[in-house]
Structures are given as C-alpha cells and as structure tokens.
Length: 214
Image (cartoon, rainbow, N blue to C red; front, side, top):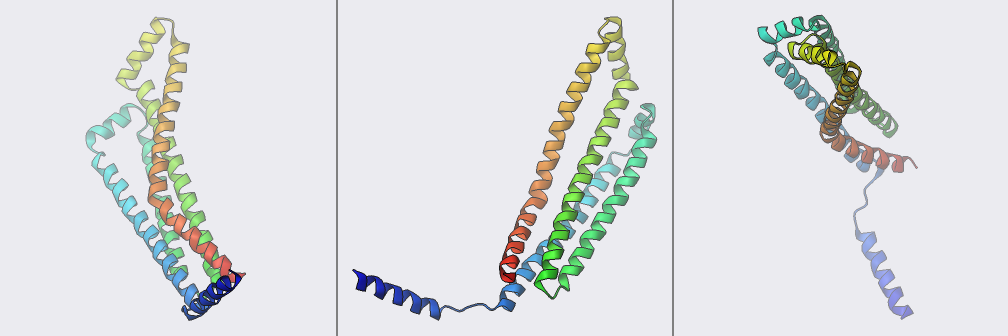
C-alpha cells in the first residue's frame, strides 16, 4: 500500500514538473491586461449612462413640464440641481478616464494595486453621489407636488377641513419615505448590477497581485 502511494506521488510530481510554469512577469501582464480592460469598460459605461440620463431629461424637458415646475415653485431649484449633477458626473467621467490612462501605463504591481483601489473608491463615490442626487430630486418634487400642485392643494384643504392635518402630514411623510426608500433600493441594485460585476473582478485581480508581492 505504501509503495503504491509513493509511486502515485512520484508520478504526480513528474507530471507537475512537466506543466508550464508562468513567471512573475507573465502573471503580472495577464492581471494588468484584465484590469485595464475592466477600467476601460467602467469608463465607457459611465459615458453611456450620462448620455442616457441626459437624453431622458431632455425628452421630458418640454414647455409643459417646465411650466409645471414653475407652478410648483421648484423650477430654479431643479435646474440648479441638474447643473450641479451634470457638472459632477462629468468630473467623475474624467476621473474614470484618468484612472484608465494610469492603469494603461502602469509598470509595477504596487502601482497597479494602488490604481485598482483608486478605481474602486471612485466608483463607490460616484454611486453614492447619484443616490444623494436622486434623493434630493425626489424630496423636492414631492414637496412641490403636495404644497403647490393642484391635487396636493385639494388634499391639504380637505384634510384641514376634516381636522386631520397632523395625521395627513404624518401619513404623507411616511409614504414618501417608503416610496423614496424603495426607489433608492432599485437604483442601488441597478448600480450593483452595472458596476458590481466589474468591481468584483477588480477585487480578484487585486488579491492575485497581493499574492505576487508576498
């Protein structure tokens, strides 16, 4: 039995010795290529996303919608928010491009690891910024619709006449919070699907690079 085990062990060692072994440089180049491709896709997706949201916004920015926003006294706030939103998103797209350029010309595993961490941090900041903007936009829109919208004014007046103003506002705020929370979860899941897979692959590349440095 012992002899058979020894023979199997020797046979395995012989086969293992015949397998091609990758050098440090070969492994690094493979990880570098994969990481560069992932960061490039993050950059491309951010541009596509920007064009999509900007196009959607322009599509709904007709004269009637603008008039409704003015009637609800939120036109200037929404326009200012859109201006800030587009400006910061363009900044993030620039950051994604810079990270892609950095990773394309990285010549060491330590620099590559640092760039991967920067990419992950930038994507996380980008997602959080979008969630905050969506939250602010929804709060402002709900406020304008209830306080200045024709239907909202009717509901407030009816609740006031029935003596249920406090309960009305409690219910309105509670439902608004639930609605916004559900919407934000859906947006977060969208971003998790959009960028999560790419970031997961980057994390795997980072772990492989860490092993090379040991």
